[in-house]
Length: 433
Image 1: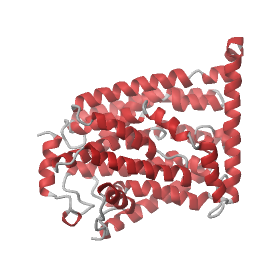
Image 2 (image 1 turned 180 degrees about the vertical axis):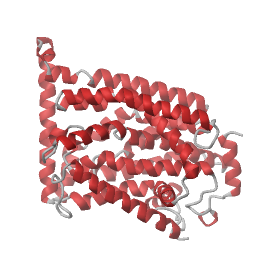
Image 3 (image 1 turned 60 degrees about the vertical axis):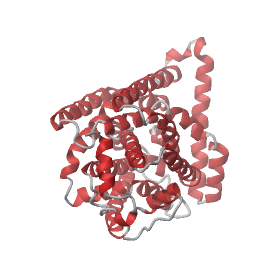
Image 4 (image 1 turned 90 degrees about the vertical axis):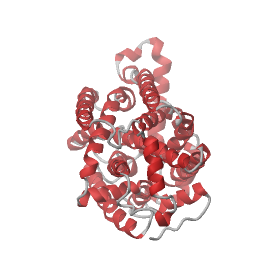
């Protein structure tokens, strides 16, 4: 029985009306628990990846030179550890799960006679949420990219799972090679004698101008945030970064959509629901994590050898690490899927709850970070180094794990999940249990 047949049976057993659903912490299908468990870990991991861009200029996300406080040896080691085990992996894992979630949603919609228009409406509202997030809260938003890639991905939901998987892998590889060609050589042109050749003079000059403009924008934004001038912060986002989402839409074709297709295909093949031999998943999961990580270590060491220069760190993040990242993402997904059924203890249950409220936790974290860092609230922007920022991450993790489970014990959905659902279906659903 394939996943579609499983879901027709599951839908018959658990109607979609909220007052007939099972306990949100104990979903009827184990595969839903596995998705929520992995999603809970991913949403926590994304905060670790993003914390620098919350508490320091956005450029510091990749380039330590943009920190407004000293970036000492401990911080440089932390940069390498984060690059190796977190950066790109948690976002990739979250994107994989988004693709799987799209297929889950479509199977339930098809079983009730609905079609792609319902998913399109759902994704269109996600685009609205993402725009609010980007322009009014934090420019590191990924929701608009997800909505854009998801709308394109609707053309692929009827494909066979193997076709989705192969197309996704092929698209990711092609996109990685494009990134490699576009970004990989920049350090050698801007920072080495290679770029002093007359043929590269104009290119080198333009690159340096772009770097200085990026740094200047970070300085301007830092001053606005520290001053606590929220209207000026919003004006800056609109005046200086209005078109940024268009660039991210282009980039999403080379990473986000391929990863979504991989997630769709894996879901259809039973990857998240026990349809693949566990021993094989464990073997290939560890192989992917180990091989991809070993291939990433030389990239970290090379970046260190350049003194973590602006263009070297950009090349490491965007150009060189994309290909070895894919087996790590799929490997982590496989290992966590195998671990999910045993996640019955205190931590496991709370991770599942955090995953069921991933939308609320993702946007809620951005709002919380505004309260911590913006000058009109906590005022810590630009004052914390990497070790102190990790303290903020751990505190936020504790908060996410603490509030998600009690909330779902009293309410059927997370607050933003409920709002998104009501907007998608065009009616008000009961939220209280």
